[in-house]
Amino acid sequence: MSDNKFLELENIHKSFPLGGGKEYVAVVDVNVNIAKNEIISIIGHSGCGKSTLLNMIAGLDAQTEGNIILNNKEIKGPGPERAVVFQNHSLLPWLSVYENIEMAVKKVMPELSASELRVRVEKFVSMVNLDHAKDKFPGEISGGMKQRVGIARALSIKPDVLLMDEPFGALDSLTRANLQEHLMRIQQSVQNTVIIITHDIDEAVLLSDKVIMMTNGPEATIGEILEVKLDRPRNRVELQSDPEYIRCREAILSFLYEKFAKDDE
Image 1 (cartoon, rainbow, N blue to C red):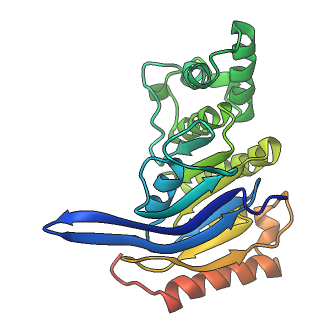
Image 2 (cartoon, rainbow, N blue to C red):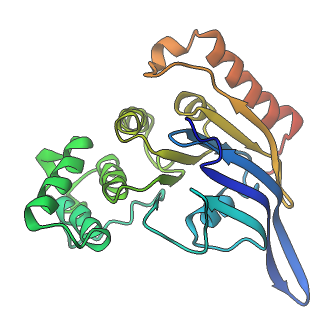
């Protein structure tokens, strides 16, 4: 975590035109520096601009004002140094697990030889423990396995930043826990920056080095940034009684359900 200004969001505003000269102001005055190799969670009630922020960092949408700078370069659109994993895995159903990952690597690393390509794809298939399913098609595997393919595909192109929009939100609790473990293990291995949108307080504390808590929209902004001072690797069972885990969990609960309570979700 040597470079605290690896990813910088400076005075970010985002508004959407509604017609008739009106606009919806989604986020205002967002300022944050994210360090290299950090895992960051963004949490807040529906409509607080979480996905809007993620889309701007991904380059899928442009901010109305302000600058987003990654590794001293301004973000002007999508790029291979940022990969996105959505709640919907977005796999191509006519390609196998192996081929879905291979396609991404081919597109971003066309210079690889056939043998280098195979080694890279197999590395990331193995990283998410899917060697046994590499020749199966998306329709033949579970939702959790599909998300693992999505994560492997995203990481296979060696992004500096992995952006995840509620990646485990549609999964049952056991599958979700399993994927959280996968993500922590993989991030320790590949050492990239990860930004996760979540509604789940326990997930935010378990995974993150910092939790960004958003105020309610419209005109949402960063309300608080919570530093999670827990050593890695983390064990979810042991953490349940850890004073730091409990402190962080209570701080987020207080922010969401006392300071910024919202009863219309």
